[in-house]
Image (tube, rainbow over all chains, first blue to last red; front, side):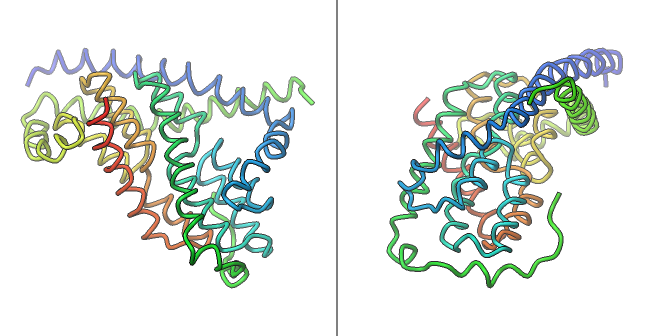
Amino acid sequence: MQWEAFAGEALHGSLHNIWMMAGIIIPVMLVLEIGRDLHILDRITVFVAPALRFFGLSRQATFPLVVGLIFGIAYGAGVIIEAARSGQISWRDLLLVNLFLSACHAIVEDTALFIALGADPWIILGGRFLLAVVLTYLVSRMGRLAVRTSQAGAKSSGTGSPG
Amino acid sequence: MLSAETFKRGLHKGLFTLWEMTKIVIPVYLAVTFFKYTPVLDWIIKACAPLMHLFGLSGEAAVPLVLGNVLNLYAAIGAITSLHLSSREITILAIMLLISHNLLVESAVSGRTGVNALAMGGFRLGLSFLCGALLNLLL
């Protein structure tokens, strides 16, 4: 065991890691907060709602999808749970939103971190988005799903919300 | 409307998240770096090499892959920075990890929205393996 080499690499690497994360995370959080105060989320929602008709998704599903896409599953799900509890959103919409988000979510923070590590931006961003669109489209065309509609109310007995 | 409050909140959230990340990234980074100096990492690498080969990854990539799926992306990042992976490997690993990570927590959250939590977790893991293998063929 070469303790000296380990200590050197550990110290240098730790400082480098913190420096790299600070350079990503602080600007990302600033941009997200600026976007929030400029109500960019509402504008994006209005903008993408027509596109989501492609999947046969209702307007009520748009907001949770956009929130999850930008901020991540935990936030997106918080919004979905709220929508499900109030009975506004169908079981089919819930499944499609979850499916889309499973392939593509938290596109700002997580993507920025992996680009900083050296991953190809086009592949990790475009690839995931394309995958999510194809997956969601295929499932949305499945016959059984096209018929099976509003059952969301039945699942709405939960208490509290996840962080 | 934008105000000084916006920037204060952004900076505060940025520093808070940075601290939350540091608490995970640094210990994982230190642990993986430590094991690099012992034979332990070599054992793990040899054991995982055949499966990782399927994704065009070296055996050591199993460490961030497992940490990312069981814990979270920050743990995976800590491990990645300690290892020496090519940019091709990092891209493949990134796609796999971005699709499936933090499965224990996020599946439970998805479960709360009304879909089957176990199915969602399994689906994401399967999708990540599929995309890893696919990218290995395409890149």
